[in-house]
Length: 301
Image (cartoon, rainbow, N blue to C red; front, side, top):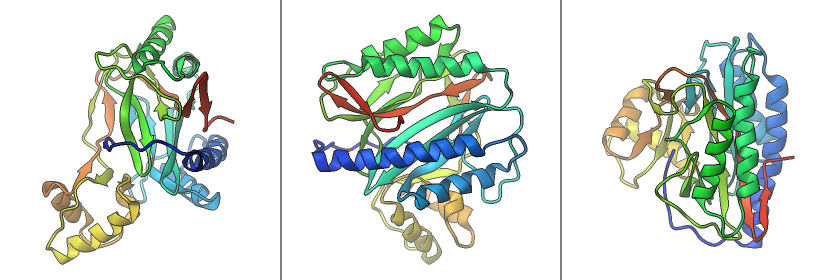
């Protein structure tokens, strides 16, 4: 889910909205951790998270990602998905916004009870990254902290997944924040808002697109002349350019409408990302406001 815009400098008013979204995020993640269990419907779990976000005063910044085992990201349930949780390693990635200002965070829940070391690797890498983040620090320094922590614990970072900047109604903005040392570099400034999200794996450390896609976003202001497709596009516009799930839409022939919009370049899709060697994947993520001497973590209690 990557889009880029020229970022405006944050004000105290906008930072307060990031903090408000972060407070809601903290509670949603607590509730999500308590709710999940083996045998539960994945669809019902996603609906529960969607509803909790609204009950607490926020809106979804993107569909909750519920990605299991070798699936690293972008998996969200179909409408009335029949899958249930088993002995799985589950990444729960939640985005919440208040007036477009986003809190983005993720956790890994090991329902197998056998992958605590893998879960720890991404969590410890996130801690190291947060300790590194401050005004003047570079994204390469953060990526190096992530990479060194994960490899020291016997795993690999996923090198082609990155953290990212956040701005109003843009869930993935500049700068990219790598999970390893990287050619591109960016120096952070006080007031920057970023999400850092280490992924650790017992595989080789790369992902590729899978065959399933249930998440989309609008990327062009072009219109369509087909009345049925236009009705779907009107629903999509309610999300202000943020990613949405197919299950959030209503209407006949949704697949036809979405395929037509994608062919016309009006929307793009985000396939499930799968670790290419089939390795298990863990993820940890927080949203940060960069300060002169460190950072404020909006999604951490």
